[in-house]
Amino acid sequence: MISYARQTPEEQPDASLPPVEEHIAPAPRVSVQAFCETVETAAAVQSAGEDRRLGKAHLKIQMGGMAAAIEAYRSAPTPNVIVLESDARNDILGGLDHLATVCDAGTRVVVIGRINDVMLYRELVRRGVSDYVLAPVGAIDVVRSICNLFSAPEAKAVGRIIAVVGAKGGVGASTISHNVAWAIARDLAMDAVVADLDLAFGTAGLDYNQDPPQGIADAVFSPDRVDTAFIDRLLSKCTDHLSLLAAPATLDRVYDFGIDAFDAVFDTLRSTMPCIVLDVPHQWSGWTKRALIGADDILIVAAPDLANLRNTKNLFDLLKASRPNDRPPLYCLNQVGIPKRPEIAAAEFAKAIESQPVVSIPFEPQIFGSAANNGQMIAEISANHKSIEMFLQIAQRLTGRSETKKQKSSLLSPLIEKLRGK
Image 1: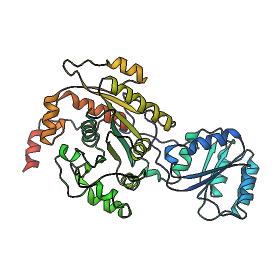
Image 2: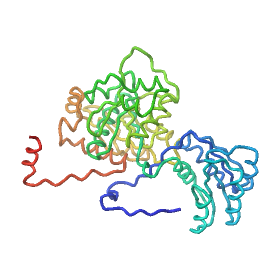
Image 3: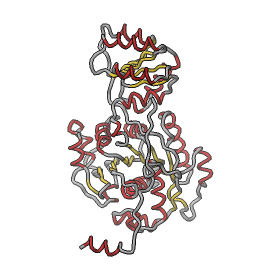
Image 4: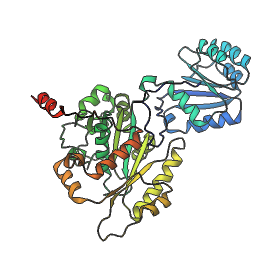
């Protein structure tokens, strides 16, 4: 079914920004059984089961449609979600009435049909059907339908995970991620948290001039304790809209993690924060691959040389293959224009990657070095520096949001500010 919502001028998207796919929150660990009538629908459901957002769901597909479902549940418990494909109107309503006699309470039903009729939809809703999807369906239609069963409409904008990773060590990915998170919080007015995943050598605490006694290591090594209250105690407040989940940056223990070590942390952050920026270290392991593939949006930071080009291409190919229903990752070039260093031009880089960089950030060691040594963001060092606009461009591309409108100043503004200060 298609719903229509009227947007106010303030809510309308900025026409200057590229379109961003809707945010579909991942489904929890649920069991899903689909009963299909056509090979095309079965293939779409199978493809949906390989999507990252259904990575925790256990999916089983059978042919036979409504009749097969009724027969299957005569002697077996029903799963969390049943997906049914049916062609005829009478078969749908009659079959659902029969299915209700063998269906467990709490099971949610998604019907895939070919009849576009509002009266039929009302009858399906009256019988307790959770969603009705018009055939033919694609993988993303199935993903959307199942995932939306477990996310409240008012929570769709919550929990967008952005992963930032360097194509090579030393390209400044952490610096970029921290400044982009600052732009998201300050310029886009979104509550955001930076999660520093480099537990041994992370620099987020230094960059934000924070030294919290606890951080992300406490959550990773105590997964049974992780909940909203526990994560809130670990967060360090940087600004009104920006928090930090800091890395310990100590070598008193090794950080050999399993593939799902960060799952509990990410799931909890999704439920409490509108935007989570992951500062992913430059290493290749099961958990880093899982963090990248599971993110809603990805930014790769690369320097303009051959090794970075090769690594960026490899990352692009893997992530596009692993996330067929998501938009491709974004990338930016950093440290462009180092004196006497031969570089690959941005146009050649884009030709090889088959994608344009979001921005190309010039090499300016003076201001970036000062910011790093002072524990400040570039915007705090120089409010009008040109890189600030680039960080905002990246933030807008990753979130799909435009800059919040600033109130117009008047002749009385300086006097009002003084009175507020008093």
